[in-house]
Amino acid sequence: QLQLVESGGGLVQPGGSLRLSCAASGFSFDYYAIGWFRQAPGKEREGVSCISSFDDSTYYADSVRGRFTISRDNANDTVYLQMNSLKPEDTAVYYCAATSAVGVPTRPTRFDYWGQGTQVTVSS
Image 1 (cartoon, rainbow, N blue to C red):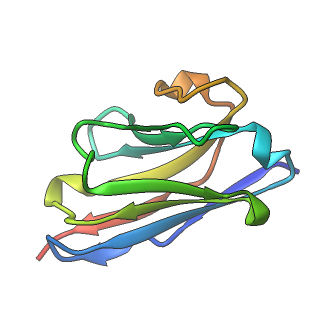
Image 2 (cartoon, one colour):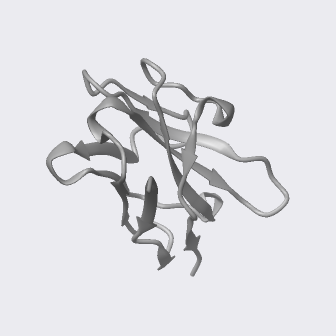
């Protein structure tokens, strides 16, 4: 059974850091690009970052470029999102998702499988 499970969310002060993990099971992880999305209350789900399946190409939204880093560990079927210099506007539920599409898709509709989400709250 295909499954994506996010972890690592929590409450952090502005300027702090968190590392999110997305653990995959039940499918050929190496062949899938993995994306991170977030959704704040009253807002649409937006793409944050994505890493491709074969050449580790990456995408970052302008709002997080230079602060967030995505990486994948194919040996352990896990993708990470290191989030530094966090801001209150980063507060949202963060989801990871998998797609068999080539490259680094950014639209949620391109992704086939989704995790349940993990809450990130940046507040003093």
